[in-house]
Image 1: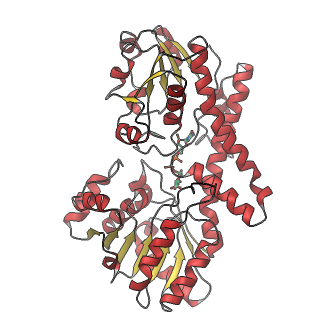
Image 2: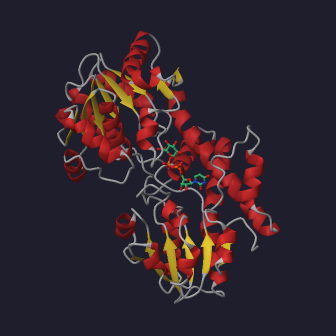
Image 3: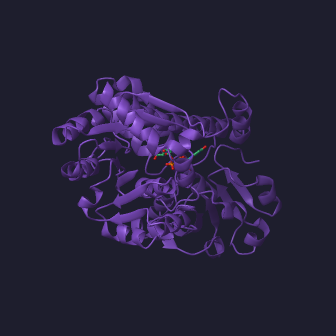
Length: 439
Ligand code: UGA
């Protein structure tokens, strides 16, 4: 099939390459010339495992091209809208500027029979509004809402082998034929038995924000338990293991620590609350305010622990921060808990030396006041305290004995419960973690 992908960020670039991998002819469009020129050279504009190889492979077949020309989408039968919906500057709501601009740019190029497929995470009601615009511009075109569930770091796998596909379609024949076209697009994953849910616009849009809200709630639940563990001397990691054995609860997404960040979970729960407010059902989601607050408190707690470990103040003290990205295997620093904690410590007068395997450049662009070094060893040199804030495998694998030789004082705070406390203590370190007692 001939497909266009509008917006080539984390979602769109991966989606475009994966659609080409599935055998489709794909044109990726973005207004960002730097991003497109990198993609035209088969270079991923951000760190995503597997994407550079996939781009090289699919671009060599001639099935994948990229352009900054809005007319390049012409001729495609299916147009995926993959632009971002960040948090608006002055409110909790989603900023719809990019979605609106993408659809406006697409409208003049729509042909009879085309499908416009929304993948961006949007406030419920957006699809209904955009469908009117699509039909007004081209009565023979149909809008479908097809939310995306990929995780950064696993984006290629999640796109090629999704755990479900959801189509929000209009009622009647138009909806049925739209679903048939999407079945053709996703023929390969569907043939693997991927569950497929065909529903209305409202449900499809809500599925996405409901899923992210549930995940955020699960993380904040275990982090609330971490607060209880800290007050009682209990161990949140053992608590998570024990409750996680109940299949109804499940152990995944119960890792206590610094909490969630990134370009999705934080802004999605806030936008969902803002939308519920507009719909007059704000009480239904008031718990998400608590989820957000628990999440924020973990960052503050880490700063407090750092102060405690350094005898009450971090002023003038040398602190090594391991990790800047919001999670491992990503260079994304949007709403990164690690970067947030490092920034607060710097504001309190600490001398912060930060390192991340992939996110140093992005973090420096946002926080030029922080110092960045290439490796954990460089950061540890002369440090009075180490904070592990993003659990990259290379940090988890650090040798506590070798690192002890580099630091001023062997003290570590594990913000992700990722290290083996016994091994670090045996190597002479003072080890503390969020949600666990001192011993
Ligand atoms: C999230 C969802 O997991 C995807 O399903 C969704 O498609 C995506 O948002 C999106 O809306 O586009 P992502 O933002 O890539 O994906 O990151 P997650 O893997 O969900 O992690 C989010 C944050 O939660 C990270 O900061 C991570 O460190 C934290 N986390 C995760 C925990 O603190 N504890 C856990 O147990 C799991």
